[in-house]
Image (cartoon, rainbow, N blue to C red; front, side, top):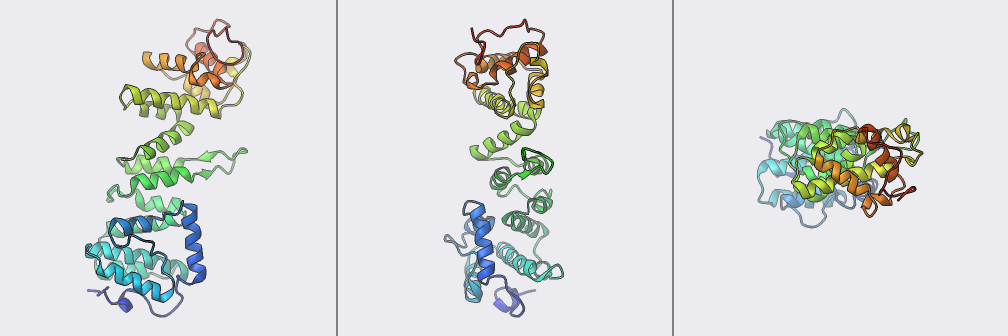
Length: 310
């Protein structure tokens, strides 16, 4: 079996190396993109290998020092090999498609498949190659390791629809990860970001998602959904005759949903004078659209914010 404790057995000593000045600068650029934290930083910290930033190593001496850190740590051999596998992906990326240093290490050391699937996925995340990352991170053999962080990064770095004139943000990869991996999210921040992505792209799904929560947080989520529709809509303030045809498809989708009695009340109170939603110029138009859909529209919307208040 491969003796990875020997530096020359773990890393090639000839050929191009990824941690020269240019390579380090490129990695640090990615780190800045992700608010100063890469997934390899999280891995090293979780394994107790390094509390301070040791990646990327600076040159050959830095790599040798990191290799010693890894080998001297008290974590399992598989955990150590996972980090070495990640580092060798840097070599493979530099040397081209024919380079298989990382996979050779995994094969010769007997590294279980789920370990290197996870690390390859995290490596792609650190390079903002999210589509390739999800091909690995959504694998059914993986535990929901770093799920909150993965989802957070995907929501905060959405793609931009190429065919959208207003450069609408595309959260499809974040939602694909959530639906495929089905992670149990632990942090409120990650849950908030997930719901925000749902609310901006899948109104019906966001509504049903909110119904999984107790009454108070459920109401807050419902109001956030309405707020998201108000913020994204065009000018919904229209005359009564035009109200039914005005606004975005998301607004029409929201007002057409079969709301419960509680949700109907929350909707009305949120848009009513004094409600948080009444501050939006679109409050009156959205309320009119709902009244039309439910057959209650009579040409006036009393107690609703915006023009035409009574």
